[in-house]
Length: 389
Image (tube, rainbow, N blue to C red):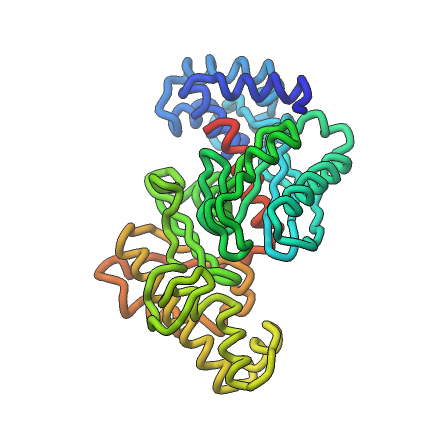
């Protein structure tokens, strides 16, 4: 159960007015910051900012005793304010088919503890047991901060209804209609948020990464799946029914290509890691690993080169379709497979340029490798966001 210290702070955040919520979120993501700049970012008067900050300081969530000179804020002394990072703790967990990746983070998503246990089964009950064990184990590592645990974020690939915590469909996990959020909340006695994994990664970028200085961006991940998250008009797009930006399931390949989701012609049917490995393995007449296929491609093997070229062309076309539809300033390309982005880059960029319409082609692309710990930090960011959003 949530400790009284954490409970009182969470209650304050969740009962705050819209103005106070905006003030806290601005300070959280931009600390240290002057009250004048908080007013500028939120559109509130400085008096309204001061009114909102006062109870946050009293609760130990905000520090208003900083030295403006020491923190390098420009101009005259401005009495900066900053979030108290360890005032509350969040746990983020990324669920993979073969393992869990868990992190305990402070309010800035700085990782305090990290663990990566394997999974012996994908059955929902077994995974729920493993998540509970992982949370308890991470709590043990928090020492004196354990009483500040405020929320838990869990990210899973697939169609996730965040409002109910139900994983409606996860091809990678083999799940349908798993009530993950309610089961975990009941077992753990904590606030639990369940989110699509790519959207969680996008939320992390929105709050603590490129989203701070960018009006709109898209996150595209390449690896076990081809995922996308959208940040438009200052918000992460969740979709009316919890699905948005699923470029991995755009029907851009031949209908004879069957996706792991059971549908035909999906981008993932040729571009997901498993699809590339299966194609190259079939060409060589023996089972190969991801490492084998990457090595063959780097060595110029025709089958491996063709498989990566096909995947890159389809991904580039999918990104162009996404950019044509919603027009983001930036596309961040991440995921575990971007460590081998040299195998995708030329064909991907060529396909994007070929299909991007007009000035949509000006959209910048940034390649940012993500470890699975980064994905778990994204889940923690969703947990933190849930306290104030």
